[in-house]
Amino acid sequence: MTAYPPAPATVRPPTAPSPGQGVPAQQPNPAYIELFAAYERAYASAHSLEGALDPPIRTVGDAWVGPAARGWERELETERGRLKKAAAQILWDIYDALSKVPPYLPK
Image 1: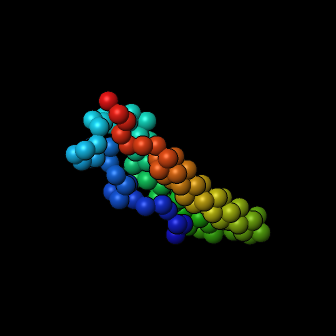
Image 2: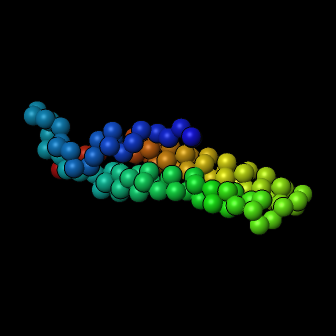
């Protein structure tokens, strides 16, 4: 399995209470809320993206055999590896952006 960043459940949700007493009044950052929602959606669908080519790979050899079929299977395996890397990269990109945006802004 490809290494994913931490799950959204381990990241501070935008609905968490603002910092405690002694801190000026703050409001949730709309950019953080949007990135957090995108991160949750992407994380939830990453495994389906990773496995998108699993069904055709499982059927190789059942309906089509020979050198061309083996070449096609290798191409599918290569593309499946790219999909797995892309899924992880998407998550890391959103996670990195989320970690740079403050969850709260001064009122």
